[in-house]
Length: 124
Image (cartoon, rainbow, N blue to C red; front, side, top):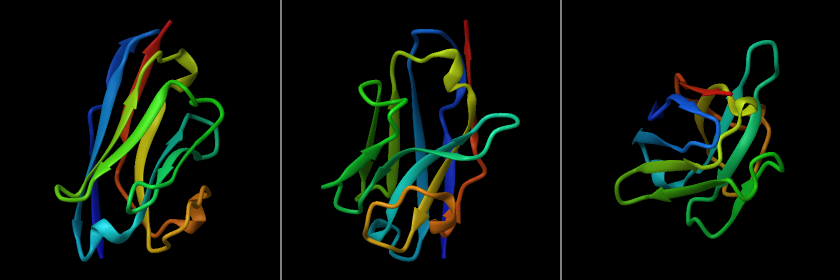
């Protein structure tokens, strides 16, 4: 079992930056592929970025490439999402997720564990 807790969300103006954190606890949490997802009101949950357990492979949604950076510190059981150049369309509830696979996977059903989410609001 893995428990995930997100933090770092908030209200920022367009062009601003935020750093989201995800604290993982439980069995062998460093051996999981992890990802950030987001869900805006009235829209489906979508992948933002994914990182494998060794951090050797990362994946980004086209909408955030060049602006967001995913990273993890397995010694601290932490994952991060550095978000720069934020746009109003980035406004959503951001979730941290973990899966027992070692591959890069980018759809919500493939993830086994989820946090409660942290709200990111970007004003225009």
